[in-house]
Length: 282
Image 1: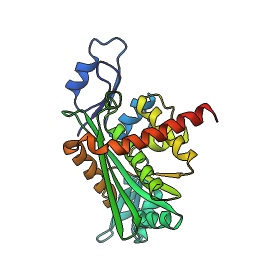
Image 2: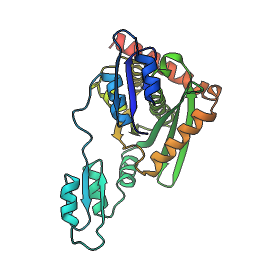
Image 3: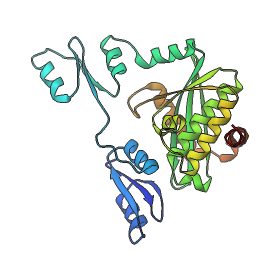
Image 4: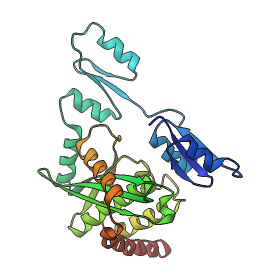
């Protein structure tokens, strides 16, 4: 995918996948607001906040036996003359440091969460344009030798404008619901859409229907005593549990039936109502 087109104001709003789609939405539309981006993450951020990142995500270049470098140029200089150098680029310092030590960063993170009583949950979302369906996939790790995979889909019109972001939101909420129903003290959401943690922490204003629903439902879970933790995961970076969640979300978007998710949606609706009451009567 070369570019993503985020339309904040137009005939069709949301993230579009081609310039012809975007042009059709904004041409002749009064006060149209739209931008193109090279990454889906940047497009999502602009769609929800109207802000454009001044620079791309930070990268960490790790060279085994040498160290960590802030740029590809510095990394190249470090490996010149080295026979069969081992090097990789990472999105976080922790991943880079773990790789240089020969450790599994995400496996360690899962183990730490389990020790602290948090259910690790890798979540992802998807959207199927021709079906107007948003969907979610979740990989839960209740033990280090076991996984549970959840998926589901929905088609509520006001949420479809946010496309796979709505799937991301429901994936996180479905993980929270499973954790609550199975007696966990907390859930650790490992997600590739940063809005999940930004909305939860109040860093982003909840202005869209899906973000408002998300914030209200989070308040309902918090009222029930469920503790929440969030960690951002770079999409399509080879993390096995994230890839499984992505696969489950895509399959649900393509083949899932909304009726299969009715019980999950009903329970989340009840929790949202409790969250709304909490906001009205703090």
